[in-house]
Image (cartoon, rainbow, N blue to C red; front, side, top):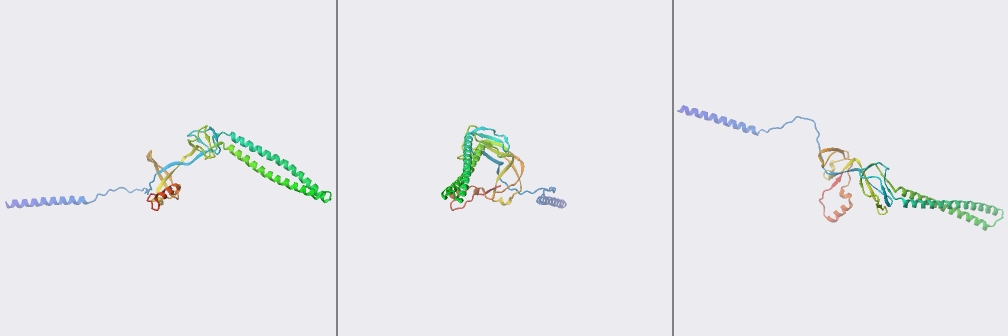
Length: 294
């Protein structure tokens, strides 16, 4: 009986040792961290500055008229591709034609007066020479000589005045010719018509402001004006590579190059924004964020 009890004790102790060993091994193995490994390969490390912006044409101009009048004909429509110098629109040129004819008539009148005065100058020069010769021969009085001399000087002065009027009249003709040319509105660059502002038959008035007829843009090259926070502005520089996507295709990326960074934030570029901020804040400070255009 004692032998059986001793054997049972030994079995119990052995079983207990086995259980403790298993538990110790399990607990120890659970404390060992499991490492996730991957093969070493070359790649790019990217430090990005995130910003939002607006896509716009790299060149965009408002094509307007420099003379007043009715828009007689419009040669393009929205979406048309035009080349530099192509006729865009024509403005009624009747007033400009009449002004040009009046200026040319005034020029011809001055030219006729100039020819008449040149003939009088020759006559005055001959009379002066004759009176001078006769005075030396004591065949004429000093009074007649002085009269001939005064007539010569007066005629020369009038001739100089007519020459000046001739220049003024020629300038006026050139101005009227230029105004007549302005009735033909041409494209200042190659591009696509993105908007028609003035319709055929409307009257444009260039005296108050430059009236816009169409809006023209180059769409073959686009530019993005992004707002960079002042916290990130020191991390960017001209020439850096950029990548962007648009809302309609968020998973498609386009490559670009940073072309310029404005030296002043947008709030400084707008005087009205500065004035409103100053009047609103008074002598206090503002915690509003500052953004630079890039």
